[in-house]
Image (tube, rainbow, N blue to C red):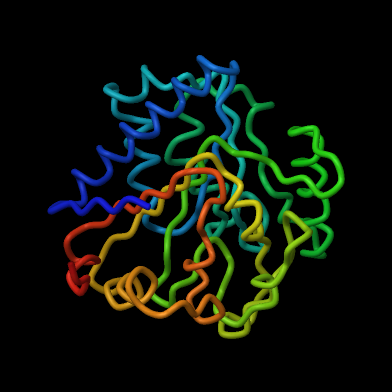
Length: 246
């Protein structure tokens, strides 16, 4: 695990963009495509905007050979304001030359969230040509972390935390009184590279608990993300890192 702390959010997002570009180029050079798992929420919005709008990055990313997936989704249609797909589409994907067939969104408009999760399992199985018991290997999984220590839609004390076989599940989140559709920890832990982007003083307590506290994955699901055969990079600003010890 590597932790990098930045004085300003702008520096953090530039560093994240640089790492995104580096991994994309390496993946395309070695196998001809780049597979990335996007996260939702407010934190990655500025990264997506930077990649999709700033010429320094926009013209250098190999968009034509990049394939985009989502770690989780709200149980809403793709045009809903709460949709993680919509956020990524409006800030980045509609502004670059990604072939439509390279965008693999979760079909969260399905009335049954469990059905949507099952369909997305099929999407992953077909794209990655998986056999029974196999998990996809993303080149990059981009994640955030909530002030309660959740990541993707793996929330504290929720049922999805203990899923070891399925790749995508519907997950009832009691405090939000809603279903979420989320990739499971085994999928995220099988990625070649995982980045956490964490900003803000409101994340400081959770970050300290996740990185330096006792292991309590049921209460702090972000602790579950430990790539078995890959790298884990935390990019955090000084506010989020304010409570960390040496």
